[in-house]
Amino acid sequence: MIAFVSGPVAALAPAQAVIEVGGVGMAVQCTPATVARLRLGETARLATSLVVREDSLTLYGFADDDERQVFELLQTASGVGPRLAQAMLGVHSPDALRLAVSTGDEKALMAVPGIGKKGAQKLLLELKDKLAAPLGAVVGAQRAAAAGPAPWTEQLSAALIGLGYASREAEEAVTAVTPQAEAAIAAGGSAPVPQLLRAALQSLNRAR
Image (cartoon, rainbow, N blue to C red; front, side, top):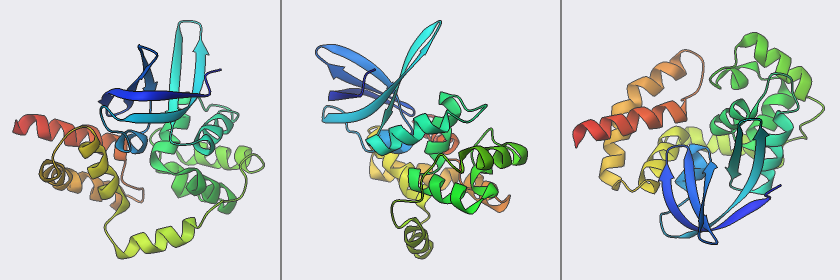
């Protein structure tokens, strides 16, 4: 197993980073939040999990070991593969997932693309004894966020800047996708950052 990769960031995409390791470019699948922390040319260290399939070897990267461990634990639930596990971490932090499972929060899990009501109920049952209690002050962070900008706006803006766009361009792109985000929130979910990032990139490409 490749536990981590470390080296200069050679390329960035909305859901992938290429890390140069010993002269070899390692393609690592990441959440938008993880990509947002990276900068081209700067040295980065990502905790990783290698998923082996008959026809592929896919390396998934994470900001830290805790995120990787949760990624692997999520896959012990029936019906959860690496893509869905990564999607769950793309919407919620490890602690937010722990909080959702410990409190039986169906809506939090349903905010993840691909998880419906029945799927959320099943996951809550299967993960209840697998995910530990929240490690940090998730509740306090959520309350603080209510008084400031929506977390999705900050996450999306950071991801765009990490991909090389100027702050002004990132701000304009966030404004362009705000109606889409507000519609998702009004429907009882949360802002789907991966989809919003793709829509924001499309708006920026049209503007150029």
